[in-house]
Image 1 (cartoon, rainbow, N blue to C red):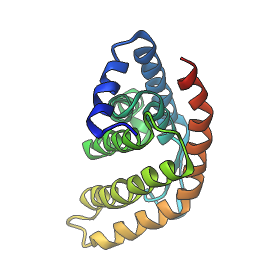
Image 2: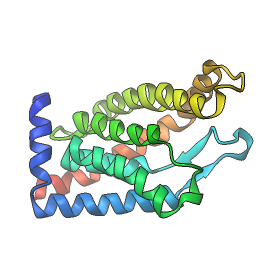
Image 3: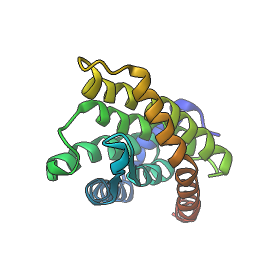
Length: 189
């Protein structure tokens, strides 16, 4: 396993090459398209349960090119998908951009230059699901919808926990299958 700092240095070097820069740009384009078209809000839960695969291009960028590339795909993907199609997800909120960046960093630290295994995916996605998707997203939703309306932070925290509990296993399986398949590309270049 590479050291923590070397992952960031090597990830930055990946973006200097034509292959890394081009592939990151394509993954960013896929993240934007997925962010606009491939998500659904479950009507019975209002805006609180959203099913999406917009994490997948971020995970691929993390596995192939590291935390910096994945953070760019996560952050820029959120911003650009909103500005290209603002009607798709309500108003822009920078907190969710931060979530995208942090998701890329977490996945990049655990998946880049490592053998993709169930253990590495479980660790990285568990950290992301708990820290980012439950706590941080719960806070952002509380900040947007709950402050001044009498809602408690715990309501948003539990709603996010239930949402992530529903999506956790399918997300882990998708990341594992796609990144394991792409591992051959990483080895072959």
